[in-house]
Image (cartoon, rainbow, N blue to C red; front, side):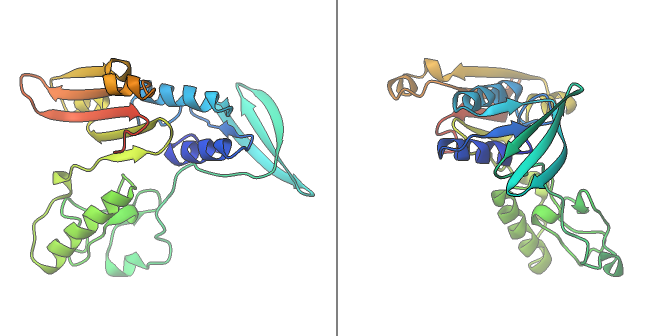
Length: 242
């Protein structure tokens, strides 16, 4: 598995539990670069317990094939190694497919990395054209695509004024344990200048989790200081997505 993002981790763990020998090669020094670091570390430990060979700070330099054998050349801290594998899965992210849409003719601004540019109402630079889903959004999740499609329908067809910034949509990485998140991360709270306090409860302090034998993980909530307004929350647990 090339890549240590949500998709890479989900597939690696799934194949490992189906009986495959799995190697994850991730060029970052940690998994899930967008998540809270303590959450990602818990997942990394879980992957290792499942027998997955974890190679961080590792780049894939080349792939060759000889007969039915695939050979992957890996480099870590200038140390080179070659591993022979049956199959190679790639989970290093996606880019929007805007190549053949002829957006220039419609006056729609875009770039090949981030896709179609939209404002808070999901209008493109051509105000008669709207965009929703992965082609225009940073967060490429099914629920985000669904919610933004609803905004586009209201704004484009029914004179609505719904805003992307008004959405609060949770997402989840479906590993074991799962990592679920909603709202802002610590870094985003700092960047926006919010005074906040963080409250963390380990699952080992939750009676139900202890009785179920699922006491790995935690619940972390960021609260606007002086209020009861929740800015963001992360749950790491077997059933965090529920």
